[in-house]
Image (cartoon, rainbow, N blue to C red; front, side):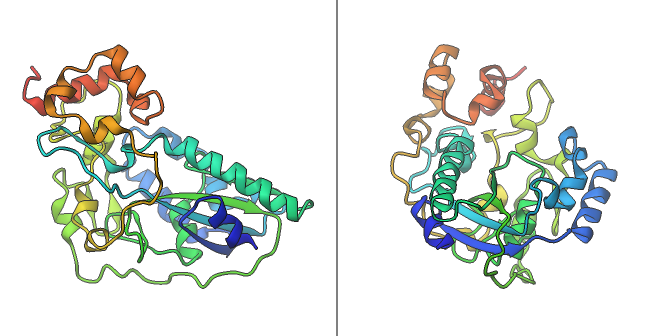
Length: 295
């Protein structure tokens, strides 16, 4: 019943894992933080106890329902345009996923009124990639992203904690990256070691962060997909099937269109986009770098 409700809510894949304390994974997170590899993401230092023990997020939690939403674009930008990461092609995924989670919770509670639920979509201290592995949905690749054997790494992850004890999926226990190192070699900033990220060197971190940073982010003016586009699992993955999700201007704007973009037009076109999180001033600065006009 749960997986049918998940599919009916519009998610592309679902796995279920029992709630446990993530002792080893939390220790690796703390070491990553101690090494300063989280750059300016101070929020990662907070609530590590909740990342370790999801029962602190929902009293009596017994199961984690993990869902994937494929976002691989069916159409890409013109070749001359400054690049936007694929996850920003679509309308703000936080809003989209929360709507789906609301629909899902309504469906589940209609059938099981006594069940307790709490949903998340990149909005709480949850080790989402770890839970996706434990729910059998894929493995954490050398690019530090979840890799689904069906959808590659072009997926958003959502979680639903529940008080119900459910039927659980077999966990993924090993990486299927093998000897491949294409993602590591593709990263222009050298931010990746196998299964380890240094955000201080990550283009995506720098070009989304407000303010000047002096980092050459070209050709990306928002985010970065070098590691994903080089991955064989992504090359074979299907495009998403969600109609009306892509922001038309993202796949239509030429370099000239981006350079002519003013703040009023930006706010109108990208009101429902994650580009709003970075804002017009920072995006404009990145566009200047991409065009070679930055001083």
